[in-house]
Length: 249
Figure 1: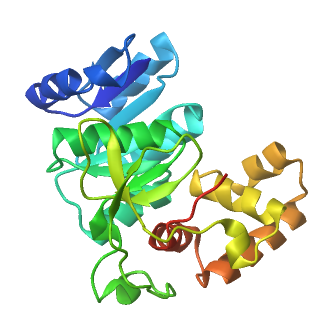
Figure 2: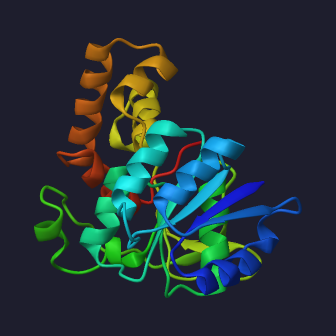
């Protein structure tokens, strides 16, 4: 597995590289101090399996870096890192196309469990993306649900979106106790397929190709998905799916 670390602090990159060793026996870590260096490295070596990118980079900002990575190397799984974990920062990273957001204040156990979840085709967001009475004001249109009590659960092999604030070294992360399936929201199997790709950050054009649907069909299914989640944007859909503990089988 090839992992690219993009951070302007060499000491942080070196420490993170050591922490990532349990992820895979064949782990190879590439390092870059900026987006520009990272893009040159990827042009030379090809896409990385996993990219961890700091949001506060010099030169090109992390948000634009995420967008560029998703556009030029769509096969790479991109995860945002930041010393800030406020809701706005988390949601902007997700909106840019990140598959997850891990605060730099997270423990090594949380980091590994979050990455294992993401590599298992899930999306990891920190609790700050969900908790707090002012969430509806920050994410307009999301109808909040009570915060679920976390319970240990193994990192799933099936796609999942999980809110977590802790994990064990064995690779487990808390998940909402009362998770739901798309069918529980009244979604058809095709609408569930569209929602799954939306949660992966796929644009409409790519959803059309992957599901062999017309543009009008994808638009109609997307509208149905947003109505079912009672939200108005894709970013809100990610947050709402996390609140519901939405799982795909």
